[in-house]
Image 1 (cartoon, rainbow, N blue to C red):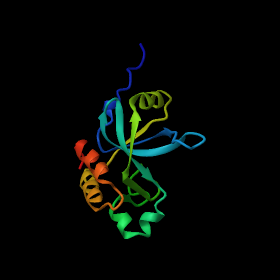
Image 2: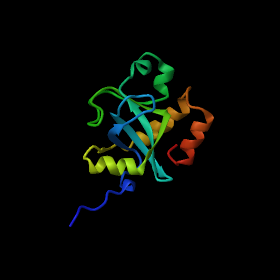
Image 3: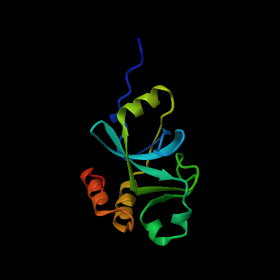
Length: 142
């Protein structure tokens, strides 16, 4: 008997995922971290997490508009990491299923205070548009 089919909805809101992802303009897929916010129209709606944190560490306004973790604070973030509310990315469920079948999908839960930190980051963001804030509110995460 084969293994049961992976259900992308099993990835709950405020969960970190890592998988190879191909951004437009890049020559190949790279392993990237995302925070899943919700599922909509056969996509996981995610926020990009980045270890390129210098802009946040040197600019108080930018820091206030992200959820920041010091490297090693959480197992999923070995380097300093900023979760970017202004960088919303829909990842198709078929991509999650495909990468899970290949063994390329890693999943971690975030601490319970993540939602509170995200709400503060959205409120303080100087880069998130009104439309972006409305999208997050629609998803029920802020």
